[in-house]
Length: 368
Image (tube, rainbow, N blue to C red; front, side, top):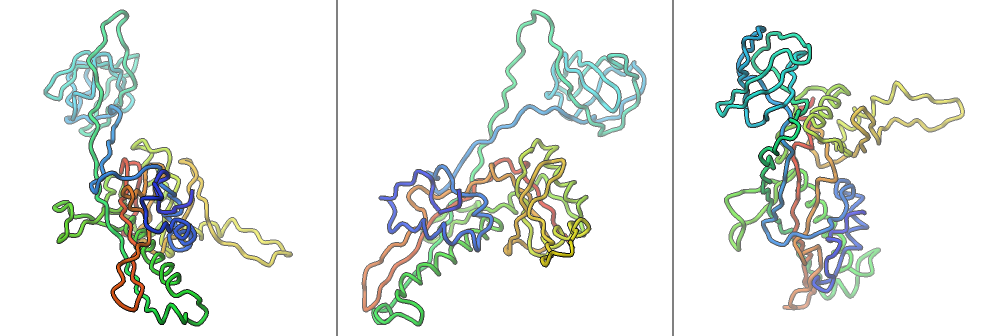
């Protein structure tokens, strides 16, 4: 569904002059990310919008000390012993082991060379991957291992533009315009949508203030919220794009569906198609554009954004991002009190960005 500024259940009676039709009309032309994300299915109920994020128990850890090749060393020092249970079958490099005891001092007891594998030396930082747990027949259940959800939050930011049209201007109109007020609404709304799009990408918040009549409240955008899958590289190549997709995949993300690129980087992505173009003699159109990128990690739409800095490319899972209006505060035109020979009003809306699981998204930066 194209972005129209509303939550899907927003009560129209609570909004001044509804402008959702105008939003839907204008959004695709200047705000490609808003159009790709579409309308939220719920509204924020407070200026500090909160949600919960949960994770599965980890399946990997690392050895915190070197491991000898001898079977005599059965104590394995790991970064997090709480990740392991009795009966876990783990693999480090080509050696498989079984966990036979778990200590609190980040040490686990293991049976070396399990299942006919050969005990070998392992370096500090070697990955210990939990293959699965082998339970005993008839044993009691182990302790609950439910993870604790983490509370995340972002603030709603007010977007506002004033309109003032003199009585004379409204009466006589302008060249090519029959209604100066209607034209002003369209122009100011286009600017607000542009600001909202840029805020989704580049906005930042000051956690020291929730906002007041003397302190401005702002929302944190995508770029400043990403931390896990952020890679610095030089020239954009397919290899770097694949590295970022794999980094997101390794974190558990399988649904990256958007690649957002500024014009310079979008042209580089499109140039990858040049060696595959075949033009026949009867064709008069040369096409050199990549709108969809398909790889081992799925299919992504490639969207060009004029607002993204030219040295970065962002990959997003659109199912984990919502542009959420504060309840009853979707974009609307409000007429203000008449104080003279003019029509005064404002378009105002209040929105925040809900970015779930930042490690499901990624970014390349410092691009040439």
